[in-house]
Length: 597
Image (tube, rainbow, N blue to C red; front, side, top):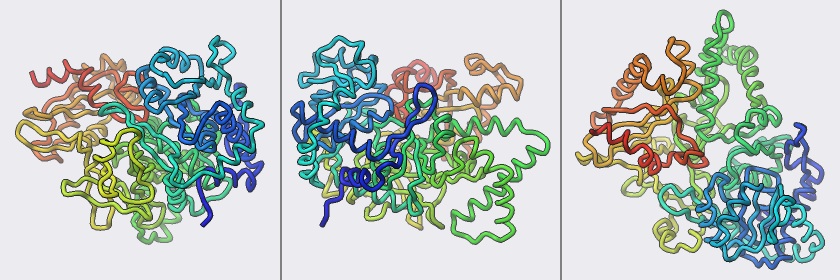
């Protein structure tokens, strides 16, 4: 049987798609420029040749730290071409985190974006005994360091080594370690998830089966989430190479809106926090409409929700409702999508953390279906997937098991996975591997349930479960999801482990909270608003509403408003916007103890 890896598919694209765009990037003057598939392959081969020229053997690791860029992708894919192993490091990582990962994988070459990233490597130099080269994407000419070389200069080292590169490509095996995905380290030191060439190729093929049935070469995706994360790698590298669509590079989150408008992607992956921010901004904007415009928006959203629900359930839609939907699309949906850069959208996906039903239904009412996905790095990304087919999606669920994958629940409700996407184990960590891989099953650490139609619902992380002083086991994420739906609230963290009752830390949404304050005539400054009687009464009323739907032992008895939102920079969120509970508990210890005083 012919070998079929991501590298094979890349080489094929260089021959088959030759001059079609593979990557798009914005130049300093604001114009967009394309990198063809042929150029993508050529530069990846050069990078692979450069690694070979400096002594890289199959299995040696290359660390990469930086914002999303063409060079990041070339370094990642180029390493795989050389049978080396790329290991991404989050650009927000501290010196200690960088030092741990780069030394753990014995990286001889580290690719860094700029001087800021170089400074972190320099500060960690005494803890990196294997380091031989620092390849700088930008700014190498300003650094006086014998280990430093510019990215293009490094690639030139391999430009004449085509024969050696061909030999490496020919020797690739499906069972080879292809990439390392380091976990975000919320529960301890990061672990290196080992994914094989087969893991990546099989998972990408399955993803294309689900979302790309009507795919064509005019499709595209926007790459903006950290490329150290498997979800972004799957969309921007492996599925992109498998299907042949183009990838628009967005180097910073604050440029996402402009990149969406420029790229008009057909596929878009947004973590819940991104969709929540879109939701808050759109709610505010739509709330400012008046007169006929407000009436059109209200009617269109009612039609969108009704028809959208019917379509998702696979129920027939009457001719009259179809006509209503087409009118709503012409009057409202198409205009909104165009403003967001989503007017060509085929499939919108969310994953990596819980998302509220309110947000999903809001976008459904605007003509945008968001398909929720569940998975983890150890499963090469997706485990279950809501699907763009009649009856293939239930809002609020994590979807159906991926094709060719088995998903079951353990005795305690733990989600377990077996299939071609299950990882090889943790790099240089046999104990953690043995704890996670049992008889071929990946033990996810997540708790879930299946409904009567086979849709998975995630209830919580095993390690996040709270056990109250009264012995009640409580899943905080479901309660937090409800609390986050309170107008003006951004994040919620439920407290209560070994406590007599539950309490919550609530942060103010920097967009929604001032908008609500303006509407109600309250002060708009977040630190003042957090202590304002009117706003606090509003929050208490909403907490009471949430409590009505909970068991008595699950209700929130006390809460504290924090004017500062949780951020990646403050250390309270991972790069994919997940809560770092331990950090939150430590930083807000006094506020927490005050609720139990």
